[in-house]
Every structure is written in structure tokens, then in C-alpha cells.
Image 1 (cartoon, rainbow, N blue to C red):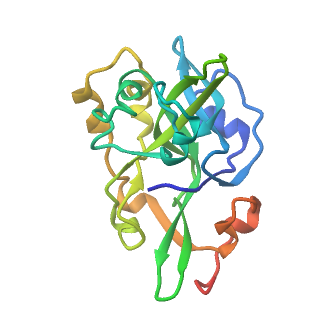
Image 2 (image 1 turned 90 degrees about the horizontal axis):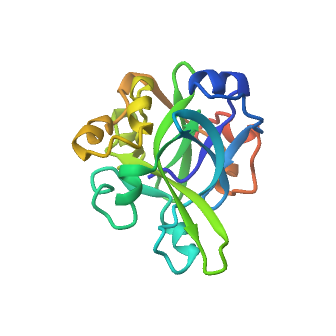
Length: 224
């Protein structure tokens, strides 16, 4: 799964990486957690824009928005058929910009957090889905989820899932709402190449969502 991630890339580089129509005004985040707002890239009438949505997808048919707390990830193998995700999978796909994410390795008496980044410290484009929910009073919440897949060799020792990292040349297809054929979309959803990622232990400070500063991504010796 993917339960925490980072986005600290400068705004100008973010705009360039995702071909955004405008340079966003975005504060660096070192510990983005479920139910918080996160940045996603959507194509509105073919124009890519960065918007802030709530992490944890709330299906349009939900009675209670709290269901989104359990919908932070969607398995790529079943998202096209699951009632909570299948409509968004066909019509409301997005990119979730990130430049790192966290996983926890189970040790004998505790869990050690690791930060996973690209070797070149570039930005990821996670495969995401977004949805719009409205309550009886007309209040709207837009939310998103991150798709996960089987781990590559870097992640296998830490967890049995990893976020889907899309190749930049797949962004156009993934964001195109006119492409709804599952057979055209699913081939994009695969583990990141092993040689693109590195993983290193970080402080236990990342365990608390209230800690959102550079110390969260600072390498440690593994002792916590």
C-alpha cells in the first residue's frame, strides 16, 4: 500500500514535469497523510491543472464520507471492477505528484520506516483516481485514491504492494477521459523498474502525521 508520501519538488519543476498550464503555488510537504488534502493533476478540457483534493476516495453513492478513510489505495488488478472505483477508473483518472513515499519494515519488536525515492531525486506521477461526492445539503467533497501494484525488488523486502508509478510517456493516455477501454489502460499499471528507486531508513518521527518537516526524510542508521 501507500500510506504516506512526500512532495517537496519546487513549483517550477513540478509545472515542467507535468506540463501544467500554470505554475502552482504549493508548500513543500514531507509527510502527506490520509484524509489530508493532497495535490493531484487532472486534465480539464485537455488542459492539465494541479488541484487540491482529499486523500481517501469517497464513492459518489456513499452515505457517509468517512468511508473514504479506508479508500486511500485501490488495487490496480481489481479497480476496474470494484463498485467503489470502477466509474472513476474509466472516466476520472488523475496523476498524484510525489517525490518520495514511505513504507514500514517489520522488525522483531517494531516497525522501521523507510523513504523510497528515485535515484535521480525526480518526481513521480502515481496513478490515481478521483471522485466527486455530494451530501443531501449540496456540500461537495472531491477526493482521490492511489493505485497500487505488486512490489519491485527494491520494495519486496519492505511490503507486498507499492504505488503504481506511471512513465511520463503514459500521462496523456492515463489522463484522457475519452479512453475508457480497460484493455488500453491496464498495461500502464506495472511496478517501477528496479534500478530507478532507492530505499533508506528514516526517523520514527514520520509515524506521526503532525510531523511534516525535512527531518522526516533525513536518513538514519536504521535504529530509529
